[in-house]
Amino acid sequence: MGAGSPESGVHAAGPLTLDACLRSGAGRIAAARGCDMAEAMMEARLIALHVTGLDAAGLLMRGPEPLSASVTEALQAAFERRARGEPVAYLTGERGFWEHRFRCRPGALIPRPDTEILVEWALELIPNPATGYRVLDLGTGTGAIALSLSAARPDADVFAVDRSPLALALARENVAFLRDQGAAAAVAMWRGDWLSAVRPESIDLLVGNPPYLAADDPHLCQGDLRFEPHEALAADEEGLGDYRRLLRAASTVLRSGGMVLFEHGADQVEAVAELMREVGLQVVGTRSDLGGNPRVTAARSPRARR
Ligand code: GLN
Image 1: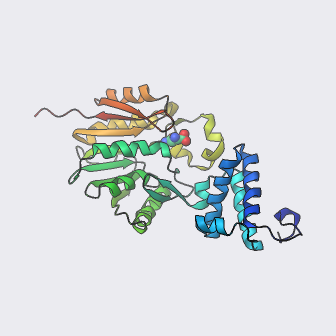
Image 2: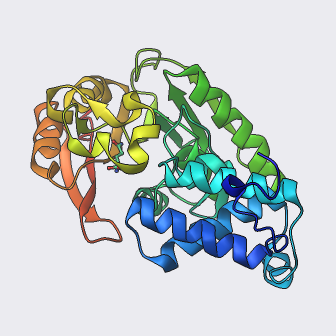
Image 3: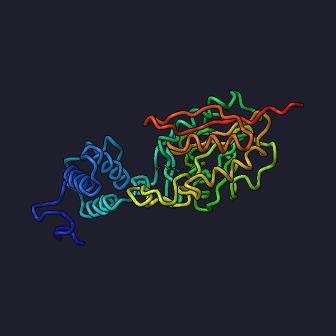
């Protein structure tokens, strides 16, 4: 598609300015996704930061300047991918979560603000100093939870497991990415199926954001979720299958007085709490995410009477 051809959107009158390209891209995104123009413009700017390599100030300053044909084409191609539904974090390759930025790629769930409540709660539970305290993140994906915890409590022993080699490679990349951001996150990671490789009575805190959508949840066929790994989103038994499997093993791997902290769907509080009780854990409570939906439930392993 050459500059000046009708498809490229570059008018014969002259090259597009960066601002005009952003406006037309945001318009295309808003129309295709049915979101408002302010949200679409924010997405277009995030994409443009990535494509042009400019920083936020540069993007403002250079707004009135004409773009080269190649940059125009690269921007329009990226805006078009977003309009067709690809998540912004997959287009830009990163997403901010808690206190750091994490690399994102198809193959691992994009970190969500909802999950920050889990990190916040975990940091209340992890003692400070945390020497000898062992935390395990189940299904770590990008590593967002495990790495955020390790960065905040460098003296805790933080572990992470994931079944997906793609996710694990990304989580390992994120260790280095956080180091570039000045964070000393050190997480021991391995590939595995939930708790299958974990020694009994070895963990103080189990955390995780397991797949919990029902396999027929209509959201799986809509918007950004279509591009994220199905196995990170959906579970059998109406979304409860993975909680059931990992909670069965959880009571064995926890040390006396150890805790579990899991993210779940807003309508799963009672079901998850019941599964926790079934394996002998004492439910401590549930907290809501920023949208006011109950999102994280904690339970404690009873103290052994010795
Ligand atoms: N909260 C996510 C969503 O609905 C689902 C994450 C998950 O299944 N663990 O987009």
